[in-house]
Length: 304
Image 1 (cartoon, one colour):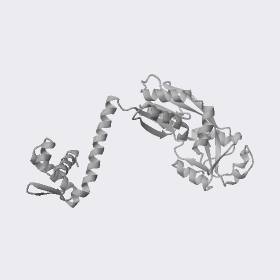
Image 2 (spheres, rainbow, N blue to C red):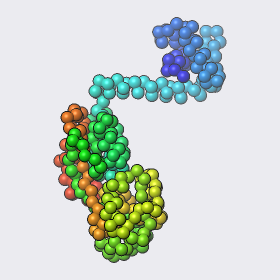
Image 3 (tube, rainbow, N blue to C red):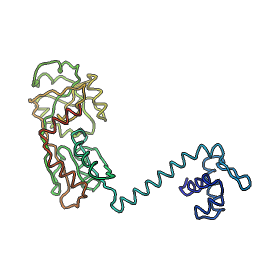
Image 4 (cartoon, rainbow, N blue to C red):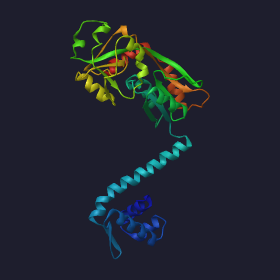
């Protein structure tokens, strides 16, 4: 199906006259008739019935009219947006965020971007540290926010936002959640079954430290999505090890275990020497000027 065929059909449907439709579309009548016939062949039935000088839509034509109109309008809108993007008239930001960072902590900055730039378009990507590092390198994104990238790169500019511990994450009805301990002893969790989100950087968990504490993730349940991980934690399939800023739903409890001594620094990353859009510069300024020590508490309360 070609948009030209759809345009001709819509013109005939509006005028109910092939001659006038051909004039409106600046095409010869035979060419218009052929295009509509090709559309009818593709859709498997007659769309317009001609009776002398009069024409009317068939039942199939009436059913197709709103769908084809919507299709044509969407194509025009896409073409308009593409032209504006090419001219730099659409404010666009491409941003990569670590899979283990809750977007709730970035919403204040993103809302401010939405208010400040009319027609603001956000292109958000998720990935592991290695994946978002690759996105930055190949220019797929302008900025990235997350934990350690897992590699050193001389052109990687880093601005730390906040440091946080990794917690034990359990459902509210889990036996560990019923304890009054403010800081769990490592021995209490050595025999627990763990849950791991596949695709999350195990490097962030510092597996050597876990092994030193007698904890192994070899037989851990593995899931792909945040929602599945959260559902299984609530259902008490096991215990997850997550950053303090991640997975803070009502039915979830974060428990401290300082004996694990796992921490990470969340930062915003850019590529040195690469020109930034005004939108990327604005977000970078918002993130760097934020008081993250107080914002984490406020955003957590709002998110929960």
